[in-house]
Image (cartoon, rainbow, N blue to C red):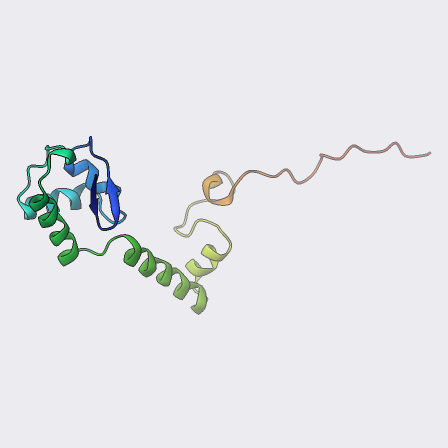
Length: 128
C-alpha cells in the first residue's frame, strides 16, 4: 500500500495510472512526474521500492499543488467570484453551468433531477 500525498494508490495498477488517483494529477502530469523521478511507467505499484516512491513524492512536492491545498485554492477562487458578484460567481451560486452551456434542455448534471411544474394535480369537478 503506497501512500503518495496522503492518498493510498492502488497496488495492482501501473504507476502512471495509479498516480492519477491523486487529486490534481492527470495522465500527462503523471507521465511527467515518472520521467523526472526516473521510474519505469509500466511497473506495478506493488513492485516499487521505497526509494522510487520517495523520488515520486519528492517530484510532486517540488513542482505540483495537489490534494487539499489545490482544493482550497479552487474553493477560494469560486468564493472570490461569488463575493465580487461576477457572472460566473452568480452561476455557481445558482447551481447552473458557468461556462456558457445551454440550460433550456440538458444541463441535468448541474441542475439535478427534473421537477414537473404544472399538470400534476387532479382537477376537482366544478359545480355548474
